[in-house]
Length: 431
Image (cartoon, rainbow, N blue to C red; front, side, top):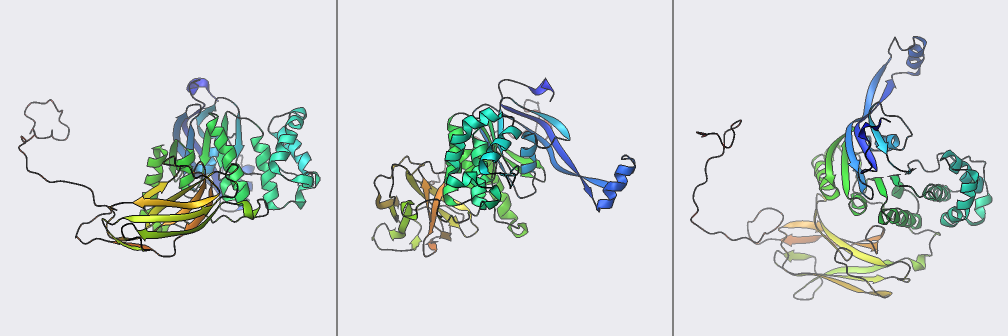
């Protein structure tokens, strides 16, 4: 990789990166093209990646969002060194580890222990180095006596745990992660979150691809929205995910998947169900009358009561959040104890959220209650209230919110006219 873009200030540098693939109509066309040494072209070029530019400083985290086929995984594979770019250049300063296709290098007839060594060798480590990491990897994977059984006897979840444990046994300067939260049981997802979050806390650089916009906002400082292989928006993760959400909402009829939906997590034998934090119940009340209600008027007071249980708070601290989703799934407002640094103590209780003088105008809203880990990253459970929340407005105001405002008549001089298009602000005689 040319050193022209190298700078010790950055851990990842990308300049004009592009990747093209050859698409053939039929397998025979590939053979015919090879026989003519490329003089008779039988393919068309498909550009999966075009004109990608960004730089990351050490300790920063970048999220990638976009629909399937937008170029996210291709970008990560190029940066991980799995496939070369067709144009442009990049440089990663420091060691890199990637969590892309977990378990892709496993030999099914080898035992888990043998695959640890062979995978480590493919990653550039010696057998002695992998032997030194062996106990740590086995402990994280929690495979017990199965570690000495052939991988072909593993369930998909067991193979996933082993692959993740091997990949994270390296302590890289740059960690590349592609959608590892979408698979595995709830317990494994929690371990994934904790491990990746520990990299962030220790100042590692992270490139993270996910369909979960919440995970992108929580784990990443900045984000790139990929569309048709090129960046459609680059910037703060909240800004980029909001832009992407607005685009998805405008084109919801063309969408073939719900990229903001979260798959409910189910407890498995990996974690004792009696030790999993739970939301026991959640209900809405009129803050003035104290009566349970799901119909309010703009200006009313809402009280949300959440009954929760956490059998082991020292090992699994929790936080609770909620939001008001409009019918088109726009988040009009969201609150969480982790945003307010409010700690839930003890093994059970009733959490009360008071919203005095609500400012939302007429509409129908869905109000879920979500049980998170202490950092507000991993979701243990999503509890849906039994009824939709209806808010009515007694006036003819329009919009989503009633904004506090005041009209007045005052004596201010008329400002000078704005310059015409193409004219400089200091030009004399500008009309």
